[in-house]
Amino acid sequence: MRIYISADMEGVTGLVDADDVQPGGRDYERGRLMMAEDVDAAVRGAVAAGATEITVNDAHGPMRNLLPESLHPAVRLIRGKPKHMGMLEGLTPEHDAVICVGYHSRAGALGVLSHSFMGHEIEDMWLDSRPVGEIGLTHATAAAIGVPVTVLTGDDCACTEMSECDASVRTVAVRYARDRFAADLRPAEEAHAAIEKAVASSLSKPPKAPVAPATPSTLTVRWQSASVASTLLGIPGVTSADSRTVQAQGTLPGLYRLFGVWMRVAASLTNQPPYC
Image (cartoon, rainbow, N blue to C red; front, top):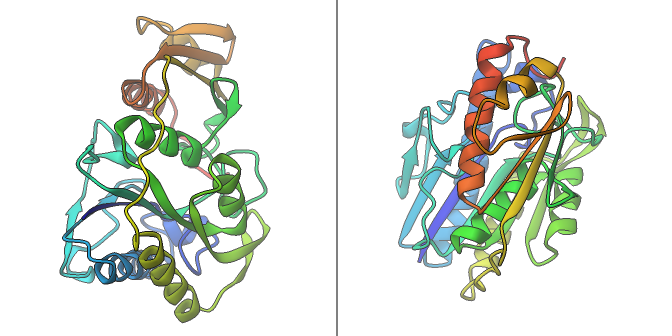
């Protein structure tokens, strides 16, 4: 059994602030260790269920947060950037399940450190008119590749967002949002035990193959900056819905990779820190 773990950071046990998750932040070094502990809890669950290969993709920010020596010896780590498939780099149809560790709710939600991919640069996103963030787009792309998401960990808002997208995914709330930068924290040992148990249980039976989209999808993104939207119109196939909103049609996972290009263009045009 081959397991793929996409590890983000904003939804990790105990973390609530930009200083916890951004390199150079006063608590970042502690945050990256907490990230490794959540990942290791998921890995232990996968090993207990009989996983023979476990790939972990460091999917947060610079994608160099996880230290290889801090992870379970069963892990094969994908680290660094650029990555053509970003948060899903290395996922193939040969994997049996995707586990999302440390995920967060989309932009506009009152979840801890909520945003969609680029801090405040992306105001809203839709996939075929359905509001999505990292959770929804990751789930849809994994399904298109042919691999089901079986577990997601994060705060209670992220868990609700995942359940609304796919009720069959097991969720583990490691904290409960009080506001965007405040939470009621679950004790770390309890959270890690819950992650390990959920992963082992979800993999105790062969995961069901997902239903991939039968028709092309439309991805729509509203940016904070009209400059970003205007520049993206230079990419073939990108059209304008209004001065700050662009869209494109295509099939996943190709559309997901195209979105990664959009983000790199946006990053070249803006230099404001996220979460402000």
